[in-house]
Image (cartoon, rainbow, N blue to C red; front, top):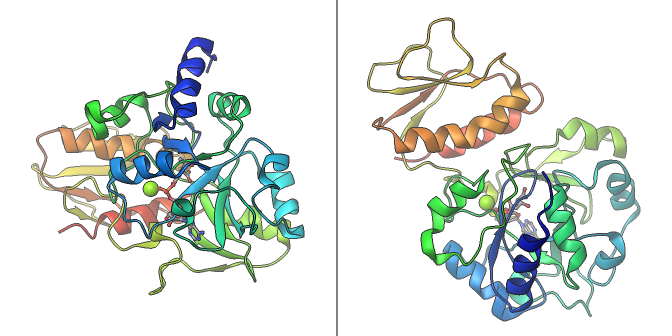
Length: 311
Ligand code: TXA
Ligand code: MG
């Protein structure tokens, strides 16, 4: 998307004054604030109704900036060279003298960091002299926002500014890999695990559901549109919104398809906006057909399973 300099200037001014604004990224929109400022970071937690124990991801422009705050390992560098900027978040060790607000990490000695690829996010980060803490721009446990209008829907007048960046091209959150001790995947996301495995030349373990919360994106109920959802359903009733992968030959009022041709990447991109669309319609129940677990299909299934915990 074309960069609008006066929008960037406005965003920068608000951020420099320790405000919290929404920014576009290629995964989902983020609720961003100066990661070095307690005052600014506090505003994120308040607006998002996020529990204080749930740490935030910090977004950087380049490695030089990151080196002030985190210890960098060989495996990080290998992944970084091939996969960043892009939909991957790394958990690294925080440096003792880092300026990251303690509220970001909930006093832990690890930090989640990411380099977004969206050209507007990149341009904005480059113009700031601090990194941006930014969780997904939605009320806690709800569906993430993939365009400016979604963010508006979540926060209404409470949000000072939404930096326009079009629809997120990936549409699903980043994959989280912990590089503390042995590498582990903590959250499935927009980047396929097989790429990480290939680069590190090992089969990385998944740690998606642990009692000890490593990453609250792992919490049971999450990504919920606030309606009951049933999975793996072939036949629907007329009063149920039925989500299917591929555009059907015969369209019906209760059918919502995720991709013209049944492409899983496109389906991931359209998943959250479809859930939001249904939420705004008359349907009070959602059923979803079985979706393949190939590639990004794993992430789609992970999100649907968590969303289906809504009762
Ligand atoms: O794609 C994304 O990652 C988006 C965009 C805006 O960058 N952000 C996002 O943030 O999804 P959020 O806050 O909704 O999810 C971040 C997840 C949370 O589940 C949090 O618990 C986990 O990252 N996390 C943050 N810091 C962590 C840490 N030090 N160790 C383990 N998990 C951490
Ligand atoms: Mg989130």
